[in-house]
Image (cartoon, rainbow over the protein chains, first blue to last red):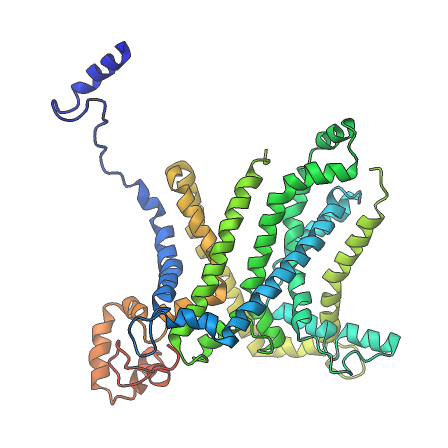
Length: 309
Length: 175
């Protein structure tokens, strides 16, 4: 009580007598500190937010002008567009899970799997390179590998005397594109999982063994629950990686596979949907899916942060 | 380690094969310009082609430019938000996530519709010159050819409705 009174006494002579509570601080003079962030936010506004808002607003624009919900409905109603989304989601899920599993096994092998240290450095360096290897060069590399006259195709033909392309088989399919996507998917998993696996303390395993638990117990009750948020978060990153990929798919299959990104790319070249609003609605759909996915990612990151020392 | 790392080696070798087979294939492919033998002919042709240097240089210039712009934009911001405005950190982090949320092709699509030919954004960027553009266009013969020639605007070829910015009576297909 004494302290409160004293606090009041010291502030009362600064504040105006009467109405305002005495403890309220004086109004600060205007600060220009915020201006340091202005360039960054201005850039984000001009080149990230405004384009998104433009896509959002125009998604509700009828072909002749005016407001409509038809474009949003058409995403679900029109077969081609629905299939494009379905294909995009499928390939993203498949390559995200495939990349996550393979990447995890690789990361395990080079961290706590008992391989020499040099092997680990090599794998991490190469993962850094490969996870950024995408687009036209990547598509070309795989055409040169398993295309009609690719190296692997010719080796199989020479060794096994089987022409794998004879029965109308082609690599420019869902499976083929999945294999291509995996090239940049699993290295990213290795890059993220390797430090996470390093973070597993030896003491945890020892504690588990002291309590009579085996390897299975250790993974089931200790390691996997700790790694789960990182695993989930990274798998989501891989999903987004594949979902937004355009150049790789376009260069590899042209328009054989109608992914959502390919349709939007075509919409950029010319109004293939014959409805600018529908093109915007498609773009909006991709943003919405990615936003939902990122919410889960943010949640998983918060869970993962608990174990970060 | 108690267990023998056989499985570790197995996965590691699969990974190495996945990494290198496409790269080796690309190298092999590039050396097959002359039928029946391996040569560096393709490289010789490429390095003698002036277009190669032009395109390669163009890619390099853009790569370097974007790095410089990114650094100029991000380093001071990171410094500032860390030391002066920690309260703004969540907002900055939110913005840094946006490029991931908006796939590149979708962002390109949005940017083109905002700043591409015949858009409000384009006009905004041109700013003070737009009034002059408008008067010049009104005097033009309505084909939009003049704008195309003078400002690189593709109104005539790409407009579907009346281009509101140059007042040309042309139509745009793309936007």
